[in-house]
Each structure stands twice: as structure tokens, then as C-alpha cells.
Length: 273
Image (cartoon, rainbow, N blue to C red):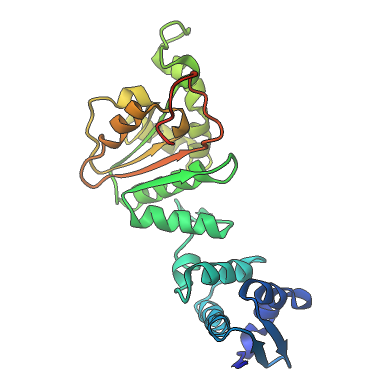
């Protein structure tokens, strides 16, 4: 049994509506909690009780540093500590959002999204695998734009396999850009959601942002670039190796895909699997 003093200023945040947050903490840490409004009595495994105490101290720390708690922040905080132990939650919540131009800010909505952004910050190559709608490409794009705005990279390169056309685009009408645009449209959509249209057009014209089919990456070495490969489940093993060997000095790559939606011809093995 452990007694934990609760700072008065975090009572409302910690307890939640109808003590909903306390019930969530009980379930996640496998403890029983009783309270008089000022002190928590935590009954359960001593190590879990200590983690509950750490959670409360971290909530208090974030509150004193000005973090505005959203509805699920306490739940996400508890989940992170259950998974990772006594970690510094300010790294996820105070530094975990992606700031773009002006006041535009993209905030991760789940524990997994926060860990994804942190991985992109820490590592040169990150694989984001999951079903559609989980923010794999959007968050990677947000990080890329943020890196460009902060001058951590000199350009953004967005690639996607045009597998529906077998990357043989000669039979499609129009010039090269008109041929490949339908396959690259989702990347443009995410980009236009983050920056002004005029600014995007200028960056595209100057080659600071480049959107191209994966086949056009062959033979290049990409230095000081943030490279995103979208729909990577539709690459072959050879294409994936080709892509990974394009990275040069100061570059970062994020490879996203959904391994349940492979559109390759029968008999071809996905380079993402």
C-alpha cells in the first residue's frame, strides 16, 4: 500500500469527470485506488504503485510547464508509463507536436503517433506500417515540412510506386507530370494541408520539394534531404533496396505502407515484408 500526496492544482486533471481517469489508471496499472481528494491510497504491486506516483509527478510537471491537457492526455500518459516505465513525459507531450509555418501545429492523437514522431526525430530510417487512416504519411509529411522550415534539411523528396500502371507510363495520355499526377495526388493533398498554395508552388518550382514516382529515384544520391516513400508495400525487393541506397549524408527517410494492401502482380514479393 502506498500513500501519494496529490498537489491541489492537478486534482481536476488527475481525477477526470466522475473519477474516470482514476478508474483508467486502476485498470492500466492493475491497482486499487481510494482517495479523500488530497491523498491517494494505492493498493497493489509496489512497483506499479511507484509508477502511479511517477505518473502523478509527471502530470504535475507538465501542468506547471503550461501544458493544456486534452481529454485523453492522462490516459495516454498512463499507457506510455505502463509500456516504457518511468519516462519523461514532457518529451512526448511538450516536444511531441509538430510546428509548421506560423501558428500551424499538428498534434499527435495517440500514444503510437507520439512514438512514431519521436522515432522520426531520433533515427535516420523509420518504417511506419499500419492500416489506412492511422496518420503514417500525414505525420511523416508534417515532420518533413517542419525539418525544412527549421533548415535541418535542404529539400523534401516524396516518392510513391505507380504500381497501378506498372510504372510503364508511356501509354497514358499527357506529358510526364500529367501521367504520374493521379498516383501522387495523396502526397499533394497532405502537402497543401500544411503550407500555403503559393509557397508550395514556389518550392516545387525551385526543386526544394520534389514529388516523383519511385522509378525516378534510380541512380541518384540524396544528401541533406527528407525522403518519404509512401505505399511502400507496392515496391519489389529490388526497388526497396534501390530506394534505401539512395540516402546520402544528412538525409532522413520514412517508409510507410500497409502490408495488408499489396497490389503487386501475383508472384511478386513486397519489399516491405
